[in-house]
Amino acid sequence: MSAIIESLPVSEIGERLRIAREAAGLTQAAAAEKIDVARTTIVAIERGQRRIKTNELQGLCSLYGTSANAILRQEAVHLDMVPRFRKLAQSADDAAEQAACLLNDLVSAEVELENALGIKRTRNYPPERPILPGDVRQQAEQDAQDLRDWMGLGAGPVLDIVSLLDLQLGIRVYVRPLDGKISGLFAYDEAVGACMLLNAAHPVGRIIQTGAHELGHFNSARRQPEVLTEGEVPHSREERYADHFGRCFVTPARAVRQRFAEITAGQSHLTRRHIILLASAFGVAREAIVRRLEELGLTKRGTWDWFQANGGITDEQARQVLGELPVRGSSLLEAQGAVPPRLALLAREAWKRGFYSEGQLARLLKLDRHEVRELLDGAENEESEANELVKLPY
Amino acid sequence: MSLSSFLTKAPRTIVIDASVVINLNATDCAAEILGAVPSPFAVTDNVRAELRFGSRNGHNDEERLKALVDAGAVGGAALDAAGLAIYETLISGSAAMTLDDGEAATIACAVQMNGIAMIDERKARKICASRFGSLPVVSTAELLTDGFTEAALGRQRQIEAIIAALQGARMRVPPEHIEKVVGLIGASNAASCLSLPRTARAAS
Image (cartoon, rainbow over all chains, first blue to last red; front, side):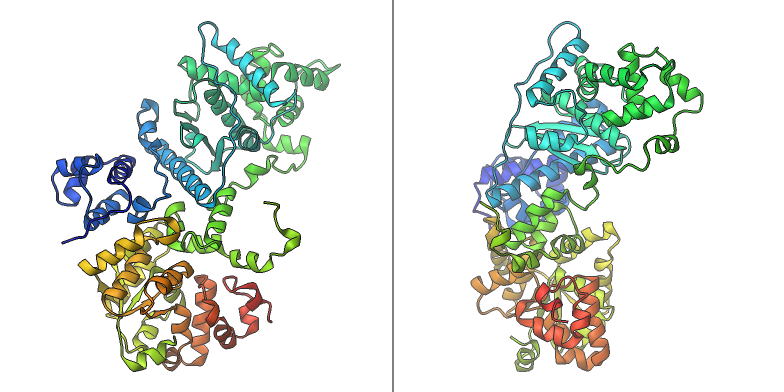
């Protein structure tokens, strides 16, 4: 005999269980088998037509890789991003699935902690610009320039795309190490807004490019989730738009022409040094800047391939030209911790205030107890250190 | 409540939480410590499941707990209908009023068995105090600083075990036991234990 769970509406519990099951990629039949009931019982539970018993809930949570508290906690945020990504034909592999799960988990955790702490995130989204008939590249170029203007970027480089997207537009951006095949993901959910996950394992120039590419999706078709994979050839109009938008946003034609003219003034050939300086100026990969020069007619088509066939352009050569430069983009430097820095701060605050226990935070952040303790170390000290001088004005 | 003074009155089952298992494992002499206490120890399946999750990061807490169970140092504990009802009240509701499954099951089981909950997590201890006033709640720090542990390990190994739990597992020490812990390990050792409050570490 098992008691019956009551506090949340039964329909809400059912919906959360459905989302958890689908995120785990399991069928109702598999769930039914686990707790030894008929499939129709799972259907009834998920539709909110039957209250789930505690022992059944424990069985399902164990199968779905979640906790009963995560299902029954009022503030818990349950997003169904994973099944939406799974529907994308090109991303139907383990690496994309794992990245989608990670994005889903990060967003759910961050939104739940924000809600618990009473934090309202400001959105400052530009109006969506659907892709229109005609030359998609022309539209992408125009839209990228318009967005730059709207954001007041002028002709300057975009060296910290995470801060730009996060602080200026209010997009949730996470930079985490992912499988090398995955460059980034974009998703939009009415409740939580636009979210991006960028691969921290990629070079900074590539991360910037990926962020700009995903910004193209956000600009043109934000309700469509998207996975950008390494070396992906853009076939659809949407992908061609995002691909070109990304390049134009990060390396705007006028700015590139201007910088190119300055750097090559009075010289007869494009050299490795020029390319290294231009790539550094715009914070993009050397290949990306050469392809852009080719596209703008500033150098002949095939220039990059020629350099590649003749020894390439090495990191050592770049060091000789630029010296040992620190990685630019403060947000990208902070990407290596167990959880993103802002999420870590929210978790510490929620723990300090006694809203969440170590166990709840471990589950929410998908960490083990050792990692959570590391994350929380010193949080108590912050309280004891607090005085009026360092009090925040809100 | 001092563990030894409580135990000398009437041994009751001590239900241990994941946080306690992790701390004990860090001492490298968990079996000796548990064996020194006259009361039996028990752990719930929820806690075992929680520890299993940590194994993906190379932590072998679940494996070491299994060894303790196999050796008879810790027994299993399951929730009955009454325990499940308590468990439900601890997992269902607002975040501030609920706990994760392992913490909730530990408390529910201790109440159900009329035993003792051994749990370090401060929110869990607070909830215990407000909702289960008659439930004795003790911490790993109490166990490690107790006379039973000293008798089993000797003073020097006892100190080493406490330092190992603090440094290796970042053991949390309830405020009321900090003085005793620092008194035992000494201020210079306390200074290098980051899980202790700054005031305790700055005393050196």
